[in-house]
Image (cartoon, rainbow, N blue to C red; front, side):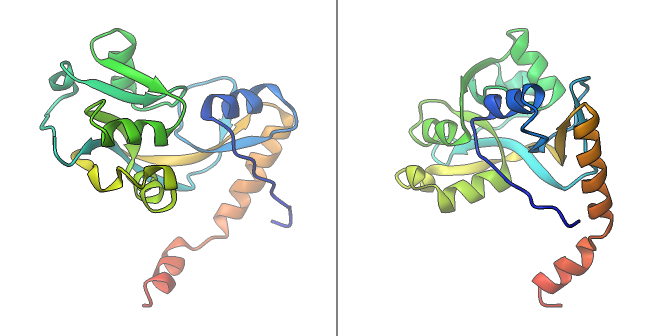
Amino acid sequence: MGHELKVEFYPWSRTVYLVKNDAKYAGYFPEYRYETDDLVFSDPIGSGPLGFVENVNRPIEWSTLDDLASHTIGVVRGYVNTPELDALIANGSLKSSDVTSDTQNLQKVGRERIPLAVVDANVLDYLKENDPALSPVKANLQMNKKLLVDKKLYIAFANNDVGQKWRNIVNQGLKKIDVEQIMKERLGE
């Protein structure tokens, strides 16, 4: 769309804080859409299969989230997961352990310090291949066979004139992208 994008990386809770409170930052991604007055969201930019990572030596069978009441679940501080999971953690029905990054949760699961952690399957694959801190444990990590949800991903912008301006520009650009054609080209069709 003819604009230069500058991307900076911060811990998640700081990222969200900066977009809501510092005019230097227009938005952050990827984010799940949720009810808020502080942010406005772009059209979808993709999707992410959200579930639990587990240790290959200790797979966990479950049907409903209530089945996980005896387990501690790793979560990243400030992440929005699913409304049901977040509510069960908030009311104490499910035990959680919060950290500041997915890598920390993956290390804990890989070393059997916790049995499960919430993660996007694409993030898990990426971190296993690209994060040297996971080298000692990556062979121990797998996605649990049951997903929580395949969630659409968005760019979240501050709910002000500047954020709305950039959201509109992004949405115009997204309309110009032919995802099916890109996928065909990537797959050599």
